[in-house]
Each structure stands twice: as C-alpha cells, then as structure tokens.
Length: 357
Ligand SMILES: [Fe+2]
Image 1 (cartoon, rainbow, N blue to C red):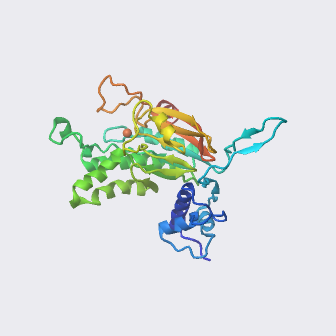
Image 2: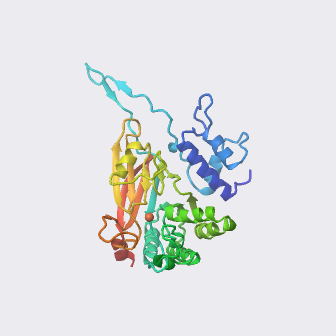
Image 3: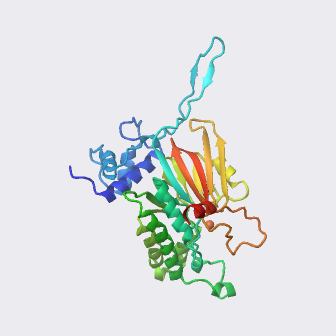
C-alpha cells in the first residue's frame, strides 16, 4: 500500500484528535448502537472514503512520525464510582481517579503579541531563541499576534488619531517581519520543527469583519493575513474557536451563552465553573491561573490566562493613563498530560531579554 501523502495524514490526524475529544470512540472500542466511531467522523469531515480501512489513523501517524493518542477519547458519561469494603464496618466510596497518563505535550504559549509598525521586533527574536533552546512540541499564539490598527473601526478615519492609522499593507509587512524574525531563530535548530498554531483573536478578526462590509475586496485582505501564517506552516483557528492539544482547549477568549467573551475581574473563575476541560486563553493581557475541583472523573479544570507578549511595561495607547491594567508581559511554557495542564512556567519579557537579548 503506498504511503499516505503528508498533507492528507495531517488533516486526518487533526480530525481524529478532534473527534476523540468530542467523545467518538477510537477504533477497537465498542461504540454502542448509533454512536459513530472517531475514524468514521474524521473521514466524513475531511471527505475521504473509509471503506474497510480501520488502519487509516495508524498509517497517518506513521507518515507523521507520531504516536496514536487514544487517551484523548473520554467516554461521554462518567464511569460509576467503585465501592469496596476496606475495613469491617461501613463501606467506603472511592471515586475513580484521573490518571496523569498519556502522551505529554510541551507547548510554548504566546499571549497577545500585538505586533504593530514602529514596535520593536526584538521580542520575537528572543521567543524564537527560547524555542530553539527548549524545543517544545508545539508553539501556539493565542491570537492578537498583530494589532491591525489600520482596520480599527472604533476610531473614524477622519479623526486626528484616525489619520495616523497605518496603511493595511504596512500592518501586514510588520506582522510578516515579526513572524519571520521568530522563525529565523527556530530555523537555526537543526532537525527541529515544532507544530505551530494560531487561534485568531479579535484583532485579526478585524480583517474578516472589514471584508464583510466591502464585498468588492472579499478574499484579498484575508489572503494577505493568512499568507503570513501559511508561509511558515502555522495552522489557524477562526476567532472564538478551540484548538485542542492533548485534550486542552486553546482559544483567544472563551465565549459565554450570550455570545460574549467572559470578562471582568473573576473571568477565569467563571470560565472554570462552566468548563468541562482545561483552557488556555489570552485577550485580557493578565496572567492568571485558576483551578476548580470538580465532581467526576476529570477531578478538576484549570484555566490559564497567558498575559501578553508585548514589550515589558508596554500598555497600548487606547488605555487611559491611570487605568487599572494588571497586564503581564512574557510567555508561558506549558506541559500537558492526561488531558490536563500539569505545569506552567512563566518566562517574563525581562527574563527573555536577559537570556537572549
Ligand atoms: Fe489583545
């Protein structure tokens, strides 16, 4: 049987991961009546015939040099509690413990970087050097990689401030230079190629919103934006959609049932109350971590807010002087295992400059 093309293997691998996380069982697990297997769902999604080929996922993994990770699959219902009589007398209940098993993923997570023309690109060189040294499995930008102030609809073009907006192509050239600066450092690490992904933020969404109101140019502007990330093999998720790594959801900002992003002082706690899986978020530029104990097999949910990846101490001009910001500037090295964030290491912009500047 000829080897599967790499692009097809990549798409199948991603679709399988998403299907297992969504509760579709991997090959070999009894499905029960009417429940679709993960491979069937993945094949349907990417439009390839499954036929009788239950080894498709394994073949895709072989092409990509990765291990199949069936630990991503969780039974939709919690397993029953196990009761055992430990001593004479009252039986004691034991919940089934979540096990920190499964594939480990190390992720270099970059909060809102807000690149803009005129802002130094040094931090991208430092982040690239950090990746080259620490060799994470994944690099993830949580979105707002670029500010794209050319398309800021809050400031009318005819205002004094509006007249100072950069041209769209200046924003694009700046964003490309920022990513290129980071990638040039990663390229110096021989035999190393992390998987890369950006969950697009509200600032990147400006491009898609602008095209909505200007049908004449539809496709032209987003092509400029997307080609920056495509050029360096960064995967993309649309604004407010999750990207899962090892069962942990990455998203620019979590969205509540009113279709609004969770906000306020206690946003991480509120998300934690509502969520059924660990989250990595950005958007508010604060560094926070909150873990809520849960009844059930997963035992707890953790929300990590990354802070921002702007230069240390830089507050965007739209904030009033004296406003409470609480922003934090740096990146986070995450370790994921068994569907949970098990380690978070902060590397501030000050530390990045000290090590790599
Ligand atoms: Fe932001």
